[in-house]
Image 1 (spheres, rainbow, N blue to C red):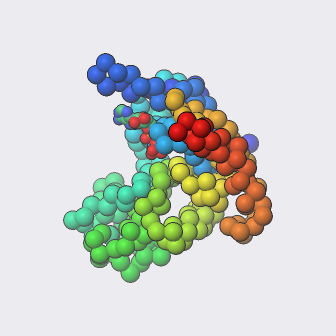
Image 2 (cartoon, rainbow, N blue to C red; image 1 turned 90 degrees about the vertical axis):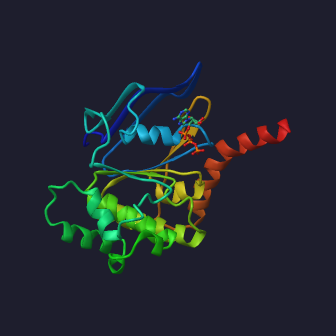
Length: 256
Ligand SMILES: Nc1ncnc2c1ncn2[C@@H]1O[C@H](COP(=O)(O)OP(=O)(O)OP(=O)(O)O)[C@@H](O)[C@H]1O
């Protein structure tokens, strides 16, 4: 078996502000293999985004070890693309300029890279458009094309479809799966949505809170092509909901 692409051992993280220390992650251990599609879900504030930011090298102040392809992660890198809930395109640049801006100056064949990656997300016609001329879904597609232009080995997706309407969200989820199959990039998505987690992930990691830790990991048996209506899909979704979230909701009901 190939070496893991991400290896996290005994990861703990705390934030200090003034005299207050807040423990956010405690003893997180996680191995991710190349080509996997991993979903991470858990209650608000359990540290999902913090964990993703650490994998992306956006936060390097933690205890424990976090390795990317056997080397410690020391900061952000082009091999680890990040996609956030908001597209983060620069409003004063066109779509093609936004992609060009994300590439190192020494990049050759920039034109070809822009065309190819906009084609992958089905947006070859909006090269000259500015972000404000795009719908939310289109802008998010451009941010995906921008990330892909840097030829990442892994894509870290932080609630990427959270701000989109239900139909656009479903389209983009399908596109993400298509991309994953086509480009064989390792994908890690953080989401609040159990349905999204089960639909996309081969493995769903459920986190618990205060401090954030991994509570359970579920292997998802996927039918090909994937279905949102099959009994198996509902069985897996219900299992995660019942084993984890229902218990939390009941605790909430009893305390009000
Ligand atoms: N820069 C920071 N300084 C202090 N506390 C922070 C900082 N960033 C995050 N936190 C705290 O760490 C905890 C975990 O935050 P994080 O955003 O990782 O959680 P999350 O599970 O992604 O939440 P959500 O699902 O609501 O987005 C939260 O209590 C948050 O307030």
